[in-house]
Length: 137
Image (cartoon, rainbow, N blue to C red; front, side):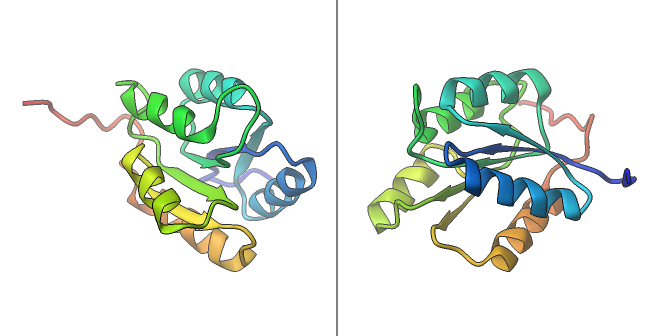
């Protein structure tokens, strides 16, 4: 069943069970999840499809999540995409590094699904509407 406000969400997770669970939960809420299992693929998808949100693990094959986030946020065409880092890296230093690389939110594993979904909806609400352009000074 297609929802009127269906949002494209990229899940970047190399653990297939975790990716499938996230995909199932997001689909249940009317979103269109796409899974990338490595950092290079995630970057390609983000720059090509320009999703409404990226859920990003940090420890990934080929390119780590910090670098994916940094490159997405450097792209004029993709920097508006909110990034929720979802990772087992739980130290204050890890969190600060995530925000320094452009993360909009940071949630550590293990996590409560309800909290993750609430954060996803919050980030989607704050996102500028499609087609909205900020003027640069």
